[in-house]
Amino acid sequence: MFTCAQCGMLACSMDHPEKIPKNCPMHEQKFFDESLAEYEKPENHDFYIQSTIIEGIGYGQWVRLKEIIELCKQMGYKRIGMAFCRGLRKEAKIIDDILRKNGLEVISVICKTGGISKEKIGVPEDCKVHPGTFEPMCNPVVQARLLNEQNTEFNIAVGLCVGHDSLFYKYSQAFVTTLIAKDRVLAHNPIGAVYCAEGYYKEKLNF
Image 1 (cartoon, rainbow, N blue to C red):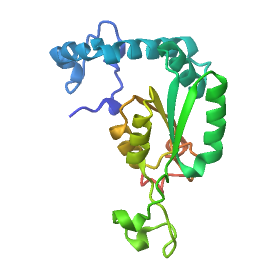
Image 2 (image 1 turned 30 degrees about the vertical axis):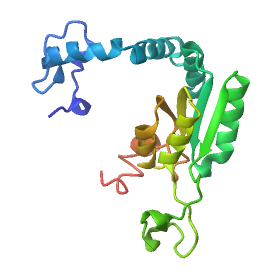
Image 3 (image 1 turned 90 degrees about the vertical axis):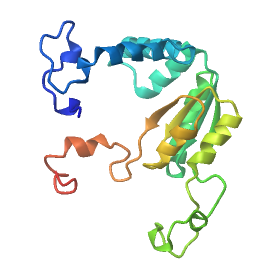
Image 4 (image 1 turned 60 degrees about the horizontal axis):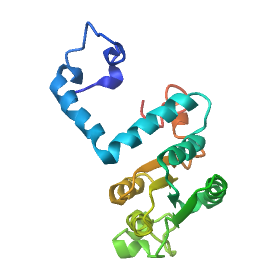
């Protein structure tokens, strides 16, 4: 069982690590050597190289949206997909405007596309946000499929629900990056709960 999150040695960040924890995955050097072949695949190689170059150039200077724009430029992407949450439609419009002003074509699909009632997919009435009212289901599979049909070269997830985002990643044919991770309580800043895990959010997180 690997426990990298609990490691204080960080042998992986050393050029010649002299001491590796017993359960460190780096003991299996053959596994890592074989895995390098995945980065050599045509669909992965340039993407990984350019991603890493962007990391270096913009380190500590570029916000994430700027990094996304620069990665698209470096990769020659022009047709960008955006799958966004209805609750962030104002933010999605601003993002759309910024991407367009940077020379990108944007195809955007809202989460409620299709207007299908939650009951139709099997969500119990008492589990709806507002029982007794019409609530359209979030539709991440269709968001991905619509962007696939439009042949987007790179997709951006904006505020999709936990789990719904996972389905979007699964069905998207293009690579996906997340610009906004949904957190309705913390203004979509989920790491705030981590920073406060030993204080304000200690009981809420059962920490």
